[in-house]
Image 1: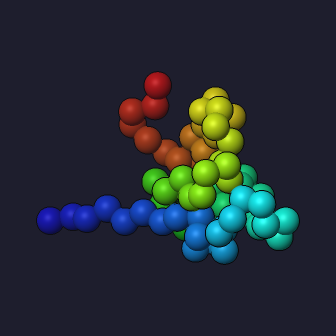
Image 2 (image 1 turned 180 degrees about the horizontal axis):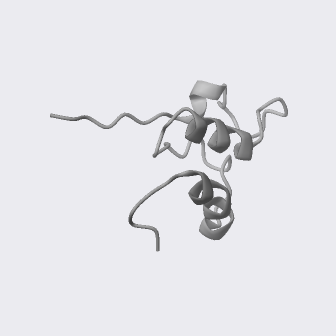
Amino acid sequence: MSIKISSAPCCWGVDDPRNPYLPPWEKVLDEAAAAGYKGLELGPYGYLPLDIETVSAVWWPVIPTKRRA
């Protein structure tokens, strides 16, 4: 049996996208990938960009997968 574990930006202190002291979203994605996470909750609305192409450009290059489209 196996389980999948994910994380969320709140683990990096992301609580309110208006907070000027939050880490950049790119750093959160990079560090989550470096920690071995293959998934991440989106966090509060407005923290991650709403454009999937922008997020994918940062996230997918660091996540090895067999099903990359």
